[in-house]
Amino acid sequence: MTTMRAAMYRTTGDAATVLEVVEVPVPEPGPGQVRVRVAVSAINPTDVKIRSGFTPRPIDGYQIPHMDGAGVIDAVGEGVDPARVGERAWLLLAAHEGRQGTAAEFCVVPAGRAIRLPDGISWDLAATLGVPAVTAAHCIFASGAVAGRDVLVAGGAGAVGRVAVQLARWGGARVAATISTPEKASVALAAGAHIAVDYRDASATARLQDWAPGFHRIVEVSLAANAALDAEIAARGAVIVVYSSDGGDPVLPVRSSLLRSLTYQYVLLYNLTDDALRSATERVSAALEEQALDMPPAIRFPLEGIAAAHDAVEARVPARVLVDVAEVRP
Ligand SMILES: NC(=O)c1ccc[n+]([C@@H]2O[C@H](COP(=O)([O-])OP(=O)(O)OC[C@H]3O[C@@H](n4cnc5c(N)ncnc54)[C@H](OP(=O)(O)O)[C@@H]3O)[C@@H](O)[C@H]2O)c1
Image (tube, rainbow, N blue to C red; front, side, top):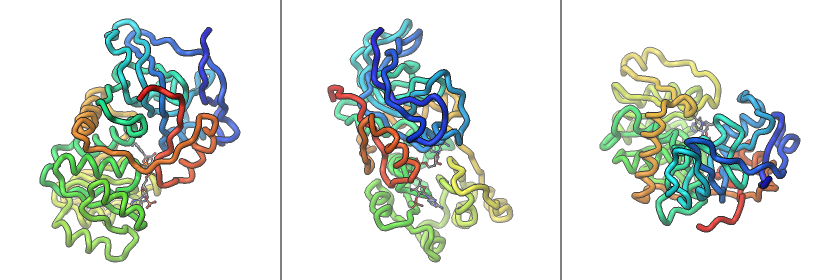
């Protein structure tokens, strides 16, 4: 039996307590699946919430964590075009419905969740796409084109927020971002935001209103903190796209929402239909082809440093957290 190095946990709990790096059997791709030799794995808050037990998920004996990663397809199952062997790919939702996450030398996923990577895109950028980019693409585009529209991305330096800024610019929008530090302003502006406004500043509402008569789409990371602001700066008929429950439950400003006929759209990547996932994924691929997405600030850990890597995500380090899994040709 061939084995591979993998990070895994058998029960949920603290990173340092439950995560270990061990040898496990190399998985074989079943019908409709591909196997990817993983170069880089990336961690998102969702991976940490699942590992800690905050988001309950069944564990099938053991769980290799992480939804996102990048590498080369090295084997295909029945029904998958053998020409895909050798294809460079970015991975989406790898650990969503099974134990084969990307924190391992090999990872088996449904063929549609290994997405062809254009030439010249680094493993690092490819590994950071997955959850943030597909979520951002759905948030920006699912309720219609944004060309010529005013878009606000709350938390425009975050993992999802930064890609949302890039995709909104790529889609032809005028883009504002909120941030809380000068460093985060630099990140959001470098991603393409036309302005970055400190959401804690007393003048935030006025500055955003001066800049846009009404925002048509608001991508929201903390409705609890920003519901009143959003309702004040939204255009009539605007869509407020909420992808996170960070900050808890909001008190919704019903009257100002009603007067502007606002729509609150709640997005959870795990609930997207196959069509919606495909559509968002195609947007990300098209943006990648057109070089509209670039590498976010990142820090990296070796696979053996998996617990420290999870701790960094839990501590909300303002950077993407990457895990080097194996040397794979670029
Ligand atoms: N629904 C889905 O399918 C989905 C998909 C991906 C992620 N998520 C969730 O979305 C959340 C963010 O994920 P992420 O990976 O982007 O995390 P992240 O990289 O830590 O980014 C979060 C950002 O939110 C900003 N923020 C916090 N409070 C804010 C406020 N009141 N106003 C404006 N910005 C604020 C933070 O900036 P400051 O530090 O400056 O406040 C930070 O830049 C997590 O809870 C994650 O689990 C959900």
